[in-house]
Amino acid sequence: MREKRILKLVVTLLAAVAMQACSTVETAPKAADERAKTFEVTPGKANLYVVQTGGWFPGFDLIQTFVNAQPLGALAARTYNVTAVAPGNYVVIGMGRENQQSVNIKAEAGKNYFIGMGARVGWNHARVATYRMAEEEGKQALREAVQAAGFNSAEDESK
Image (tube, rainbow, N blue to C red; front, side):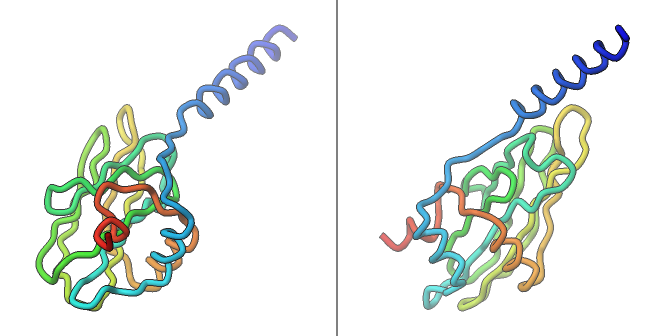
């Protein structure tokens, strides 16, 4: 009887800790999210969409994202950032507490590029897995996500 109470207490405490551990980010205005999901590309530019797709521990840690060493913003579970870029070569980096991974993109004007970032089991924190996504896979992931308020978004460049 006493063992059951102790087990129930331990499970309750673990659940409370897990709920407190979830990371969040500020989201972009709904209009910006809806506009980004039209997948329209500014003439002479390409769009880089970076989406946190989940994984083993999707809400445990934030993933910091960078494009050519410039901060794009933080991603929590099921969030994304987008930035419009000139044609050229780009390195998209996902950085977590335990590691960082990158993907190289050769952007062409008029195209959308989708980069997925997932969280997987790490030593003390989630590890980042960064990968290129096919267009339909990327669009589907974005439909299930909400735009994070990034530092360098396509919305910022239109002002």
